Image (cartoon, helix red, strand yellow):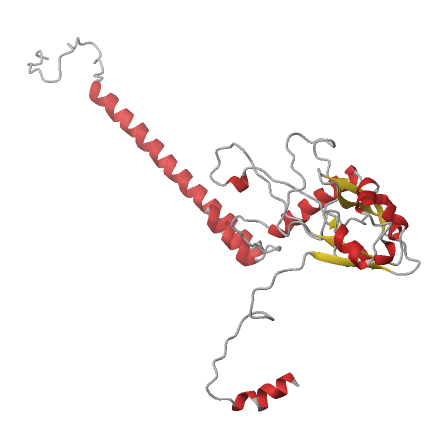
Length: 304
């Protein structure tokens, strides 16, 4: 009907200024910080709440622990909510004697036996409140954490010291958060889960280096590329190719051997010519004395 009115009557209006807001009301909404928890006939408060406690100088009544889910948890009440005694008394006039302020502050667990009652809880602070702070080496005492209230939590880790420009890269933290009613895991199970998570995350990130893809089989293209890389000659092993290769090797060997022989003969001839230049042998005639003279000396032979 509302949409029909907008399309029929509202569209016919003139001289109207429209204001739109991202809200169900023109004013800024204020979140309600009260939760009214109703326990019906025969439904005791102790069927859901395990223990109550008082905290602070004013002895504010809190739920210390739950035994199971029930009306309070369904209403969003957690251990950091405070029982509003005044509003609870106003909604339960028939239980005024059991809901006296001095009784509840001295013995809050008297609420566990009540049924057919409405309890009013108030969230004292809608902002985030620190519930745990720890530092130091691994220790069950240092890092002991109680059950956190609410359905979500924010973890903030700080590192004091270090010279890295990016503080987020100085160290790493692995944390496991479980619902309050979940099975408690042993240290060995948590370590195994952390290692599996680390392995899967590392594999999911993949290799960050430059990738090189090669074929699995050694086909001609890959063989030619390998030969080209090392300066080898590529040829398929066939009978004709092998015969041709051996003939080329023999021809090259003979050619090299012939060249070596000619060089040897040239050296020997050069050595002999050198010896002849350095000395000259003249034979001695029979019955005659022959004087040895230098090659450049002129002389007259003796008369016969």
